[in-house]
Length: 309
Image 1 (cartoon, one colour):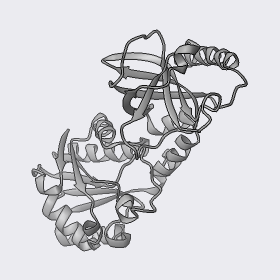
Image 2 (cartoon, one colour):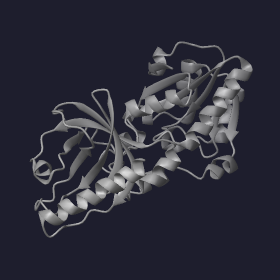
Image 3 (tube, helix red, strand yellow):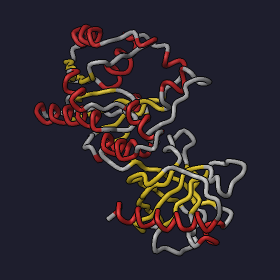
Image 4 (cartoon, one colour):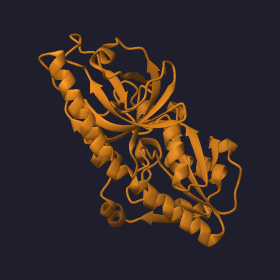
C-alpha cells in the first residue's frame, strides 16, 4: 500500500477510485466500502484510493470538548487498511483553516486538483465541507461539474452489517470486547511500553508487565480482567490483563494496565509490547486479603487458558 501525507504529495495513478472519511476502527462496515472500491478499480483498470484525516476532525473543531477516544492509532489504522487490501492511502492534515473550506472548495482543491478521481464511492450518510454542508446530492452535482463518477453505498447494505464506530466505542468502554472484536473483524489492540511497577504481582506469584499505552487518545476498555495474547521482542505469548484501579492494593485509585504473561520470565522494562484483547473474564472487584486475591488470580488464569484454547 502506498501512503501519502497530504494530497500535495499524491502521485497520480490511473483511474483513481476514491473513498473518503475518518475510518476510525476500520471495522467490517468500512471493509465493505474498501472491497467495493477495489472491485471497481479492478473492473476499470484503476487503483483504489482512500483520503482520510489526521488528527480526527472532532479533535480540531472542538479542541476542549470533543470527549473522543480513538479505536485506532494512526499506525493501527494503516495496518488495518493495508490488510483490507487498500492500494493507496492519503492522510490529509486536518487543521482549523482546513475545517473552514466550503463543500465546493473541498471537492475542487482536494479531490479534483489533488487526486483527480475517476469515480468516488461514499456511504449513504457522507457529509463534507464547512459545517458538514455537503451531502451526496452536492457530490453528484460536483461530479458532473468536474467530470468524475459518484456512487453511494446504500443504507441497506451498511445497516445489514449493523456496525458503526460509535457502537464499537460503546462496547469497548463497557468491556464487551467480544462484541467489539466481532464488529471490528480483529482483536482489539493496545500498544505500549513496559514500565516498572511496585512488584506486588511478584509477591503473589503472578508477575506483571505494567504497560504505559503509547497514545493518550486511545480508548481503553472498561475495568476488568481479560484473556489476551501479546507480542514482545518477536515472541507471541498468551496471558491475562487487568485494567483498573486495583482496589485491593491501591488506595489512591490510580489506573493501571498490568499483563501477566504465561510461561514467560524475562526482563522487559522499556520494551514495546502489543496486547490483543480476546475476551473479558470478569469485572474488577476488591478482595479482603492477598490470599483471597491470589486464589482469584489462579482462577482467572485457568479461565484465560480455557478462552485462549
